[in-house]
Length: 113
Image 1 (cartoon, rainbow, N blue to C red):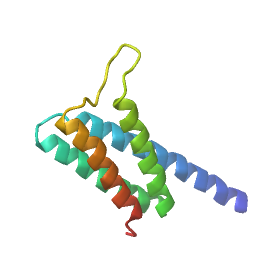
Image 2: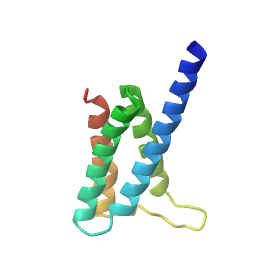
Image 3: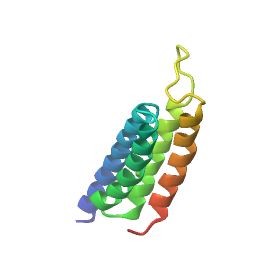
């Protein structure tokens, strides 16, 4: 019985990881579009999505996993790729998305409910 619970926990962790990566991808796409509403939508998506990950998978540790996946996607989008492409440029909206998104993700993880 304990093996089944461990498998369910592993599947929930993988689901939270995937969910956080999707939230990060949506934020990367939205943050520089529809100025200035895109950045607001990206930050709102980050906060609501990470909170929802905790509710969906049933524990606060899954919020942390989703937030770490969000950070990984955002940092990867903010660095140069193989052909010098970059998705989060160093402008006002890019900086707000990285720093504000990190703050929103941190608040969402620390918040109890």
